[in-house]
Image 1 (cartoon, helix red, strand yellow):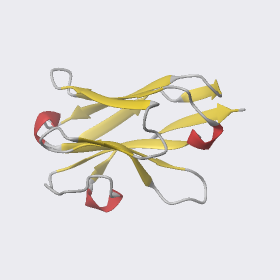
Image 2: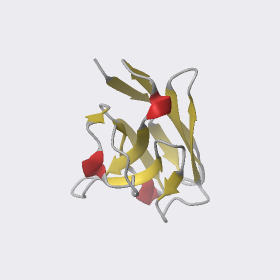
Image 3: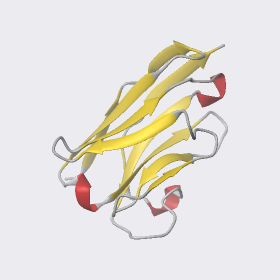
Image 4: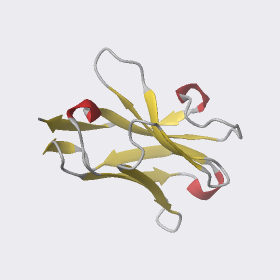
Length: 124
């Protein structure tokens, strides 16, 4: 059974940093697209940073230069390093995986397995 488990969320002040982790169980992440998404109350879920199945990376414009996505295939773990956090980064963060091979991995609808989410709160 495929399962994703996120951790690393928390409450920080603006300018701070957090590192999110997503451990995958039941499959090998090295062959699949994976991504980080976030959803704030009353907002739609949006792509933050993603890996394609062949390792290409995409970032949302709002996080470029501040967030870094990475993965450790040996640990079957996806990471999101978030630096210079802003209040507008406050949201529930989810990792997800997809078996599809597409051009744009930032679309939530292509993902079929999601973690439970981890809350990130940034205060001003």
